[in-house]
Image (cartoon, rainbow, N blue to C red; front, side, top):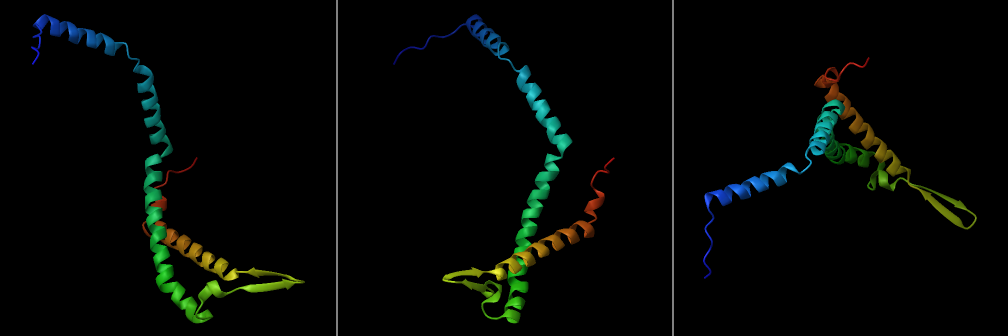
Length: 137
């Protein structure tokens, strides 16, 4: 095994001083300015509120999807038949060409959209979240 050289106190202090000098040469002013600018942007633009709203909106969409698939869709299936809305189609024949319009899916998507819009509206009005928004000048 090789013997390790013991450094004297003065040599350690010289190495620490050299390391400090190297650290002082690193330009940190620009990084601090950019970080400050980013934090200002986050505060002014309400990014945190946007992130919270996105998370809540995602969960609200999942809730509405489950409500539609477990409550509304079975009722519609009872009204229109076993295939439900996906079975509602209209076929058009022109000469030797055929085209099928699946308007049942359009109705299904419209029902889901209206359900999401209503749930979000009632949550915002029920919790009086519209009062939290800043007044526009």
